[in-house]
Every structure is written in C-alpha cells, then in structure tokens.
Image 1 (cartoon, rainbow, N blue to C red):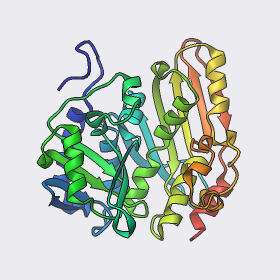
Image 2: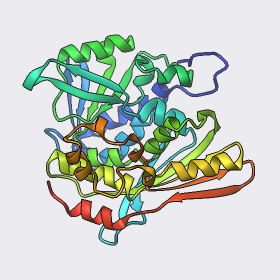
Image 3: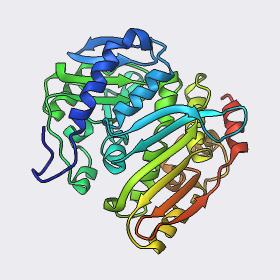
Length: 329
C-alpha cells in the first residue's frame, strides 16, 4: 500500500486500520456488536439492534482515526457528577483527524420517508477522495479494502453500499461499515472522541497552516447516553463545546500560536453560551444557520515549539455541561 508519492513518509490509513477492523469483528460477541453481510459488505451494528458499549465505542474511535490515534477512558476534569471521559492523542493529528476521522463524505440514497442519509468518516475516505480536502492534504491511499464509520440509525441500502465500494475502487465484500447511532453507548463515546478532530477542523477553517501542527491531545467528559436523538446530539456536542480541552503543539512564530489560542475556543462564536440543543432548536434544525465557529473545544492550549512558550484560550463551562447532561428532550 502506498501514498500519493513514493517519498511521502506518511503511513497508509487503510493498512493501519485493517487489524482494528479484524479485531472488532472477532470480538463482536464480547463487545455486544452485530455483524452481517449486506450487499456483500460487512456491516457492524454498534447500537441499532445490538447494544454495543463503551469499549466498542473506544475501539471504533481508534478505527475512525485510521489507526493513528490512541483513545482512552478514564477520569477527566468536569462537573463532579460526571467525572469520567474520553482522552484522545495522535502523533499525526492532521492525517488522523482530517484525513480519516472527520465526517466529510455525504452519503444518501432515495427520497422521502424511506431515504437514507449519513456522513461517512474513517480511513475509507482517503480511498474515495470525494472531498477537496485531500488535494490540500496531498494524500492518497491505495488498498483493496476500506472501512467507514457512520452515525446512522438504519442499515444502508445495498445500492448505496455498491456505490461506496465502487467509489473506493474495491469489491463490495472488502468494504466494512460500522454503524453507531448517536444515542447509543458506542455512538456517544466515538462522537466525544472527536474532541481533537473538532479542534483541527476549526484550525483549518481559521487558515492556520496544517503542516505546522506537530502533535495534539484532547479530552472531554463522557455524557450519559440514551434518550432521543436531539438529547444525545445536544449532550455530545456540549461535552466538547463546554467541557472539552485540547493541547496542540505547533511550529512557527509565537504571535501566530497566541492568535490561534485566542480564536480557536468555542467562546469565540456568537452562538456560545447555550446548550447545543437550544441553539439547534433556535436555528429550526438548520445546521447551516448555526455559527460554524461554535464547533470547537471549550479550552485550548497552543505550545509554540520553536520558543517553548504556551498560550491559553477559552474556559470550561461546567454549569452548561451539567445542565445539558441532565436535560431530556
């Protein structure tokens, strides 16, 4: 397996993630996952008809990062009633987060009540290359197998599965789709494990050079799962927006690192200050009506490696996290 140019030192996301897929399937009974073949593809159910769990979500998050991330569960700073959370680290944060974990491929089939829609994330995106982002990253992966993670509450139709496999240039029986409803245990875990990815996505939107990001680590409290979709979506977003902390290590001038630390936190958004479910309701369910600058961690530290100085921005909002984690919609 090779990347776009022979001299490119970056690893193959497909190669690194393949063993994670194999272990997920092999351990499916222990992890309370369902495994079936649909349209030839391997479909892993992590919360639709099978309950899944926190460990399944942790492993799915590592798979979603293309094998370039380490995800752990344990104590994190937060409101006293919610002392546990997710910590994410990557020594290749740009490739792990933007090249793999980011939900950047819009997938749909049909129309009306029976339509299927989901955003595809995971290492298979680097095979499909349906986003201009991959030209910017100058990264191309080649492999005979692909894996995707979707926040979905239904199994994709066979026609869409065939389209995904064809776009990736692989046989359908070499495709793996992992389905994680947001309100499930696994879904909640893998969404909150995007705390570092959310920071990288906003950093990119702010125009900070991606090649100057060297390392990154983030953490966020783990919300109680369950309930309806709006409740789960609100809680997982608030865990990051008001409870998430990220530390980035970058090269370059101090003033640019300091500026990044000030502009990156969610507090820079006009929509900051209310639980996400309320913001979403006020926008009448239109994501595009929400200020895109809101989607970022609550608190950020940026260390300028050339000087050794660190800059801080934002602050945790434990009262909002507490309010969100108890609210039911």
